[in-house]
Image 1: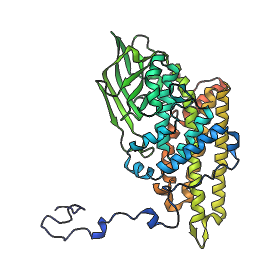
Image 2: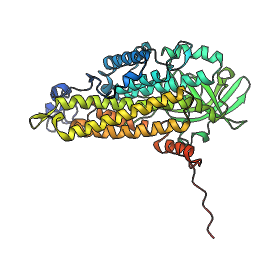
Image 3: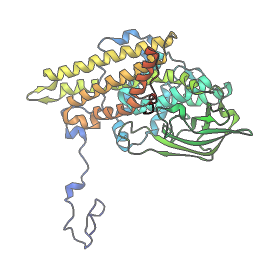
Image 4: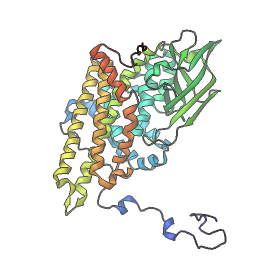
Length: 440
């Protein structure tokens, strides 16, 4: 028997006996028509989360960055984000609009980069994440990992060659450290780089690499076969022996195109060896900044969740009154608001510690781990407040709830970041189990 479908509603014998009724093929109602009592996130809610007036702590330039990024995200990204998130596709047409914000490159000075303060770059990250976490991850990988590696560790020729086009988003970059067998234990990576005449041969595999399926420039880390130390390399997307395939079936950051990278005898010329990366410790120069940016992602996501819930509770009515009028709703909303104030202040302090040269790896790790923990709590409360609509991406919270999960994990899981801080405050490293004594 032929199973009826929208394109073939007729059975094999030519009858309509087992065909679905016609209403089965109707497209879904637009969410605004199906649920007119509350406004979906495609029309983004006004900002309502700055209860302690954090904006007063920002410079005029940082306030201008916040305003510019917020307006762009609400106008250009909010109307399309749910559609692309559902399809797990990237909206390539918005890249020029993101480039026009002039935030790629963040704190990098020169080479067409904006030279923002670390706080200004963090604010931009939060404002992008407030509307869409995937877009913020796309920018973070491109800017705070790949571009920053070239800026901090690359040669002058590499900076001149790559940074100007990356700063304008005329080209896109990714950053490949994680491997299938080495996630938290990234320093043990086994991708190899072997010196040959005129360059290097790279062999190995990378996984979970954001932007990699369409990146023009890949910053890749591999183990020097001669020294056994970690080195950095720049690979072009069309390099022979390089293949990149998309990782499917993610439940979070679905717009981000994460990929598996396989390198089979990929030749990298000497001029694309990143000379300033000679050990795994050299990656910490980059991770110190990027971990601050990652900490500001959940701050921004939580701001968006709160803004959405704040509007929803005033619009949605049950038992003859707006949900905002009920004590239990207010209690949860205020708990979310308190979380956000604390998260913002921790993030702001991280920026100031970095600017003064006082920030340690433990500071950055505690900030990232604690902020993501509070953000998960905030998202869970927001999901409760929206009831049934709390599982619809149309109302942001469900989408943000899922997007927080990979952020909780990447750039150091909650547990690994806790251990980094724990090592700093106790003097004992506890990343590996203590060898058991043999039994007598």
